[in-house]
Amino acid sequence: MKRGEIVGATTLLGLGIGFFTKSSSHFVGSLLIGIGVGLLIDYITFVVSERKKKSSS
Image 1: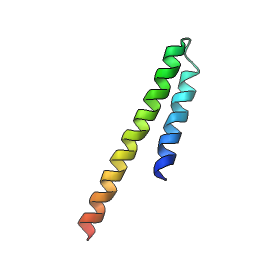
Image 2 (image 1 turned 180 degrees about the vertical axis):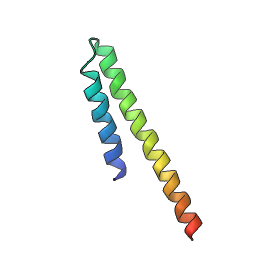
Image 3 (image 1 turned 45 degrees about the vertical axis):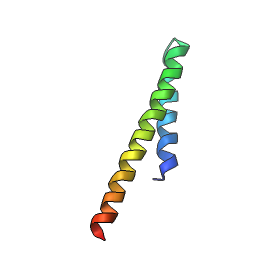
Image 4 (image 1 turned 45 degrees about the horizontal axis):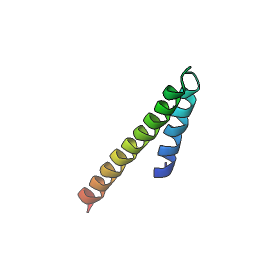
C-alpha cells in the first residue's frame, strides 16, 4: 500500500464514522482523528521499512 493511500483510507474511515454523529464538531473531530491516525500509521511503516533496509545492508 502506498503512503498516500494509508492517509486517504483512514481519512475516509473518519469521514464515515463522522456521519453517524449528531454534532458537526464530532464530524470534524472524526475527520481530524482519521487524518492523524493515517499519518501515524504512515510514519510507523516508514520507520520500520527504513530499519529493515539498514539491517539488510
